[in-house]
Length: 219
Image 1 (cartoon, rainbow, N blue to C red):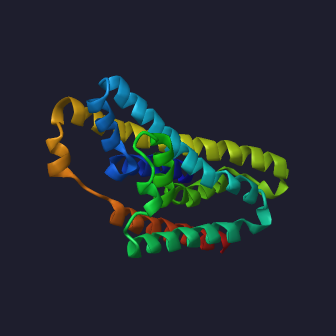
Image 2: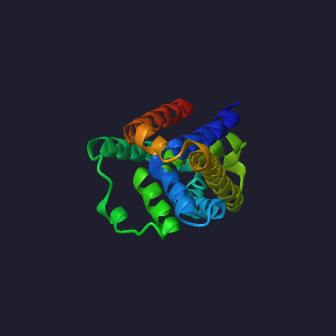
Image 3: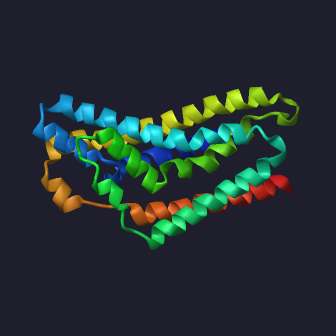
């Protein structure tokens, strides 16, 4: 049940990101309206998904090596939780997006998505969840070879990134299609919402929960 709950958290965080216009679905709507219709909209969603996937995987993959150090797993999990908490607090204080994002042209959707996901800490949000999944899957890990752990954790990291990105792009894509086909541009002007503050608070909460679980496992 622990592993199932953690995988559910991966999906829910992806849906949560997909709902946030800051992750790019309005750009997909724009591509569909200004280009050749649904084909351009889907192409834009594909580029957004690619950038988001690279951003999350780029954060998760280094931890495949770190989790192989079984003796330091508790410290690694606590350290990762602290990083997530600090980053969430930083986002709450500095709510303006980094200037370098504004210099990326809308035509460079994959690069833009990568930069936004990195700036929002999408990969960091997944780190405590990913480490928990690795912990849940490791039976008698102290007697397993490091290479086996690395291989298993690498596969898990890629899967977490893919599942999260799939949930994100499906949710954002569904909204984009609805806006283009039925709701229209008035929906954007009347119903614009931004989840940045809620997202930053969620980072702090996830980091706190992850730290508490790490301490409890050690007890």
